[in-house]
Amino acid sequence: MSTTVFVGGGRIASALVAGLRRAGHQGAILVHDRNPEKLRALNRDFSVAVEPDLQSAVAIADMLILAVRPLAVAETVDAMARFAGASKLLAVSVAAGIPLKKLRRRGSRIRWARALPSPICRIGRGLTAVTFARNLTRPDRKRVHKFFEQVGPVLEMPESRMDAFNAAYSPAHGYHALEILAKAAQANGLDAKMALTAGAHALADAIFYWRESGQKLSDLLHEAATPGGTSAATLAAMDAAGYSKVIERGLTAGIRQARANARR
View (cartoon, rainbow, N blue to C red):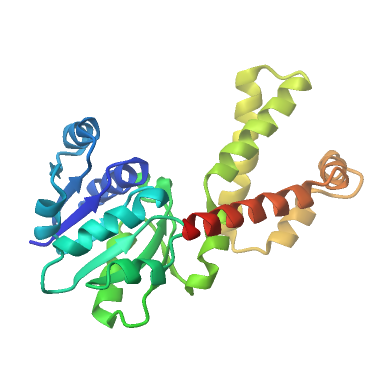
């Protein structure tokens, strides 16, 4: 039975472990973290093995998921490389913004891939973007695909697109939009619960219908916001206030931050 080792037991590791357990993952899961409280929580919640010693964790890994914060990547990869042994270990970094060339430079004895899973993988519906080092074999690529397909769809792309994708697909967009929409509804007379319910259905139901119907987004938007109607007036006012430019600036800022993390 293969063993997947998570190096880092934070938010994204927890979400992946939850999704894997939900999917009935066949294989052992072990988590390494220097924080004993995180390890106790993961062991209690998901019955995974835990290991506070990195060398021991790396020694039993068939595949390793690097799930530490971007600022901790360099130090962690240096340590992993020392413990990797004679055969090259397959490792997937889920640290946003850290390029393959940096990972390979510090961990040259490791076979590298990158993945950007969504925290929504916790319920088996999170999209994961993947990219691979050019020398990664076809079996390794297939293995990474199959691993993340357990927790949702997988989209392979060139590494040059990863930062923009990461900025665009974060579930934070949905939470933020819902919060702003609900607050605006409250300001216009709805109570808090009703405002949140209306906003949640406006966003979630529309996106679900678009995904299930197969219709063009432009057609659905035209249908929902007929000229002279309240929706058309609402959207026109939002566009006039700079809605599109605000979103564009937000994504640009996210990409800039990812690239700054990569330089550290």
